[in-house]
Image (cartoon, rainbow, N blue to C red; front, side, top):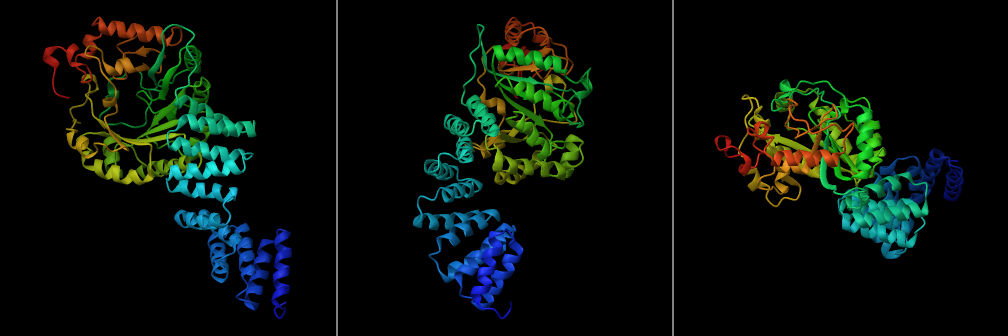
Length: 503
């Protein structure tokens, strides 16, 4: 065959390509190119063969050579864009798609893939425009509607996202991904089932402690004061909560409390039960036990957000603050989950957080600089509170004003989550805005009750609405003063004069 003319090699390559023999086709097209280096068609089809083999960089080189020979080959242009997309050369891919669309403005696949490239670049407005054009041209492709919904989620256009996911379901009623995502988008847009009883908890977050066990030993966490350090919440309590929440919807459920949520062996079932109520479910974790595979399973069951409590930017400080090993593995977990979020789950929020104290304050700026380009939903910088008077003297809070000035107006960095919550003069904003359920099913005044000295009822037998109302009434009657007096969340108007100070 070596002495055969170009047409013999080229035609043989075409036959092999049609029959799916891609390696042999690539060999034939390379032989054709040796006969006629200027045969643009052979370069194009070599690119096709290499694409089927997943050799994207080589395919891109073949398409580029074809375009050098004949810049008007639209087929080579669009496939070069696809090969560049596969090699993460997103800016270059957009350039090629733009050139293709100047010649073929109604190419739906080109608009769709251009949207994918723009999404990877974080250009969500432009991506939404491309996806919108793709679904206009080919409205019968469910996955294109999902991609449009994903772009709207990144823009926090929840109503539009829900509408896009619903159109995907209209096209394909079996699209489970779209069904899950439309529920999350509607929830974030504020569409919750109306309460069937008087009163509502629509602005309240439930902090649900699925376990009081924790494999970290953070210096600022007074776990030694806890009487129950290894308790697991029962599924009976979770199911009772779910039934109650279906009647009295809350704004958000966060699996957090004092323990490490990933230590509960039934975590996936807990997420599934609570997400079935239509309520947003998030979780807090130190990240060491949450890899991307587990993240994907939890998202499939309805999880809509993860808060990673990292508290350090180096392994040494991480060990000093949290007494944990495996910092590099934890960072790799978070990075993989952020990448998975960007690729498949833009509706999912992923935050990284840092409790600022004297042991780690020197790493705050580096922490923000490290995570900023990885595009978490938010970077949280928490001031260290005094844990209702139980904070160890070995760990000290620091002045947060420098960080407040540095990150003022920064849409990504939030200094002090609770600063965004309005506080009444005589009512603690933490107690008002949050319901804390400890792992034994009891509603406590708040998560600062490490010693479990307050109880406002049991989720096993009482409604959240009634328990929350009773809790606030008791607070206003000053029945909680003994517990709250040493807490720096306590509103000044209710704090005994001798305990007042600057937080």
